[in-house]
Amino acid sequence: MCRIAGIINSKKSFEQVNQQVKAMCDSMQHGGPDDQGIYAIDKTPLCLGNRRLAILDLSSSGHQPMISHNGDLVITYNGEIYNYRQIRTELINLGYVFKSQTDTEVILYAYQHWGEAAFEKLDGLFAFCIFDKRKQCIYLVRDQNGIKPLYYHFDKETLTFASEVKAFKHADIYQENDNWRIYYLAFGHIPEPYTTLKDVCSLAKGCFLKYNMQSAEHFIQSYHEFESSSNIKNEPHAIERIREQLSLSIKQQMISDVDIGVLFSGGLDSSIITILANQFKNKQLHSISANFNEIDFSEKKQRNSLLQKINVKKIEQLITYRDFLQHFETILADMDQPTNDGINTWFVCKTAKEQGIKVVLSGLGADELFGGYPSFDRIYKIQDLNWLSKSVLRNMRFSNNTRFKRLYYLSLNSPIGEYLCLRGVYSPDVIAELLDIDMAKVINCLENIPLHPAIKRTSNETRASWFEFNMYMQNQLLKDTDFMSMSHGVEVRVPFLDRNFVNLVLSISTDIKFSYKQKKKLLVEAYKEDLPTETWKRSKMGFTFPFQEWMRKNRDIADPSRYQNKRAKSLIKSFGENKLHWSSALALYRTYHVS
Image (tube, rainbow, N blue to C red; front, top):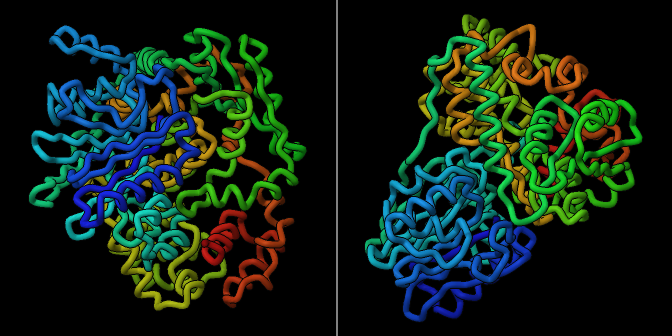
């Protein structure tokens, strides 16, 4: 796992480009503290950089950027390839010779042998750049689920890329995206492909960007797309396949030359990951959890019910309001992009780092695939409102009820309106007031967010799952998990998002996959015999902290006098009266306090 950066075909001097790429990499040192490297040859219009977090083959053989034996290929890579041993064996049988035990070298020769077809063979989480000297082209490639980030920028004939948006300022790319605050106040995050910087875009998941260095032309092409079907309609068979495939996923993701832990909240998803990971461990597994003085937020009792059954090393960190206050500004600075989530991940990954753990497993992805969120029930209500006229929906902005105000989003000429009705932070009229802009600009901005045409073919629970998987998880949970964990040099692996497991779940009929009476029914049925009853029978709590109380105590956030905008003052006053959710208050604070 690493951080990567590069500049190609720049009109700047060789020395200046080298300095900029080095500065970009140094700014991401937290994500790659173990090694650093630069590839640059005088009179070659290219410089690639890498900061390494060593997980596989801890020796200097894993140094990056890595060059092929004949010098024709160069790679700088961030990620883990879980099936690299199988691909390596296949390549050895084809006559390839390897100098290291790294998955980096496997990617290099997989591309050399299969070309662009190699990308689809990779199973893991990854973002990398390959320089092909023979073809004089560059490839930027991102994994099928977009677990690892990759951003790029074009300016005339210069391509710049990096793992973090903040790194671009070291390449003199710092012009602000005029619309980022609109996105943030609507979503609570900035949706792909946009960022806080103008023309700095996120490469779409399952895609590669090919750049011809001689013509300075480029194109982006998808190499993998997940598709839903109803091939599996028998519930016992579905349960059997879920158990089989998730075990394979976790077994592959336990591959590491360093200690592995599990982010263990005590909920269903992390409990399943914990019991399965414990079966495949090479040495004692670490379970990492957060505790609070606020008893309503402690899941210690639920965790202990499972931990009494298995032999793991229990790591529990008490996190207090004082800790929150002490680290709050550091946490915000570690956010690569403004977001209303991720603070919890920052704290537990900090604990992992302090215990010397570089790799942790997470239950992220199960709610989106199996229907764990309230949106799976609410989608029916939203679709039942389609008969209302747009004028009626637009008049909802005059309501004093926040949920009713969000109904305005259903009048948008885009399915994005449904998502924002389900999960939006502020309605368009409030956003316009907060930013002192015309509401038409807000509407136009949101309606023009590109969406995959697949959403138009979905309905009901499948539609809710698409929104949660491709919008909420993709744009918020995965991004937040990545930059919050990597700020401590910790890699988070997500077994529920294994490519083969996702393919399996998407092949199960919605009739047996989703249930109104039992959230994540199939997952519960698959593992209820392995888990304490209270783990799967209780209502979903989520991996949450006492943020409502903590942020109301924090004067920087909760003092209305610190906000100049009239509507912001009013909303923060409501927050102080406990009439506004903490995430909405944080969105205001971040909107007006971003450096």
